[in-house]
Image 1 (cartoon, one colour):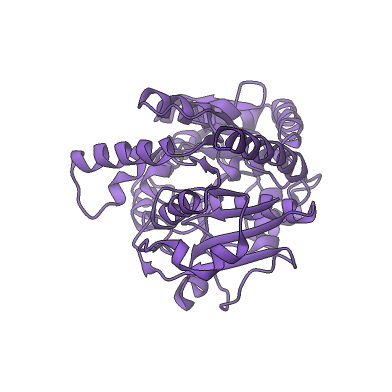
Image 2 (cartoon, rainbow, N blue to C red):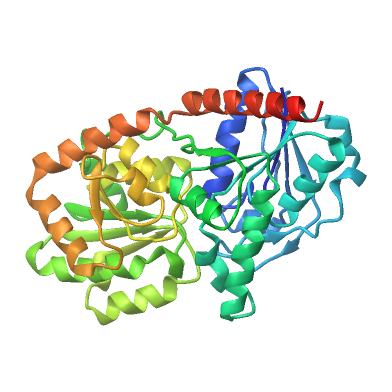
Length: 398
C-alpha cells in the first residue's frame, strides 16, 4: 500500500501524536509499505528548544517527509506551527506519491490539505481524532465561550468528512457520534515502546543520578494548565508529613512551569519537587527506572503515551478517571482517581508507599496490559484497517 499521513504535529515537536504516527509509520515501512508524511516545516528555534540541530528524520528508502510552509503558533508545546491550507494538489509531491489512502491526524491546516487531496485524487480519507478539542480551546487568542463551541462544531464537521474514523479512546468516538458524525470507526491504542521501557530491578543508581529521594512520584509531559499538575503537587504536600522521603520528579517544559513552582513554594514543598526539564531519550528511559510510581491527573487525555510508558516500565500508575485515561487505567492496572481529587491522590500515594506488594502487583499487571500495544501488533491492525477502508471505498465508488 501507499499511505499518505497528514499531521499538524510532527518531528521535532514534542507530541504524543507525532511519536505515535512516526512509530507506526516505521513499522509499516518495515512491512514493505510506502509511507509519506505531510507535516509543517519547523524552524531552527523549534529544534533548539529540545537541544537538537536542524535535520530531517530518517525513515528509510520507503519513507518520505514532505514539509509544508508554516508559521509559528503559540500552542501548548511552544513549538507549534500552523500551515495555511492552499490546496496540496497543486504540490507535485502528493500527485507523484499517488497514495492509496490518506490518513489525517488533526483537523487544522495540514489536515485540510489531506481532506482536499483525498477528494481531488479520489482516494479514501481516514481520520484519527487524538484530542478532546474543547479542552484546548483556551489556546485560542480569543477567549470566549463561542470559540469553544465553534471549535467543537468544526472538529465534528472535519471528522464527518472521513470514510472511517479511529481514536485511542472510545469516549471520543462516542462524542463525535452525539455530534452527528455518522462515519464508521473503532478505537485503537497508540503503539507503545515496550522494548525501550522495561521494568527496572534496582532503582538506586537512577535515584543517585537524578538526585531523587527513596520514594519518588513521576510526571512526564507538557507542563500546561490542562495537565492538572497542580493537583499532584497539592497531593504531595498532603502526603509529605507522613512520608519523610517523598519526592516528585516533573519531566517536560511548558507555559505553566513558573506558576507551579510558586505553588510548590507556597505549600512549603519546593524542595520535594524537582523540575528536570526536557530529557533526551536515554535519560528519559532512566528516569522512569529511577522512580517508584507515576501520576497523571489530566482530564484531556485520549490515552497518554507517557502513562503507558510508565506501565511498560512496571510502574504503578495513578490517573484521573476521565476521558481516555479511564479506559486504560483500571483498578487492575493502576489506581483511578476522581478528577481534581487532591485528597484521593494523596491517599493513593500513601498506600503505594506503604504497600510494596501492591506496587509490584500493579506494575506487573500494567506491563502485561501494554504488551498488547507493541508497535508490531498495532501496525498489523492498521494494515487491516487501511485494506478494509480502501476496499470499501472502491466498492462504493466503482
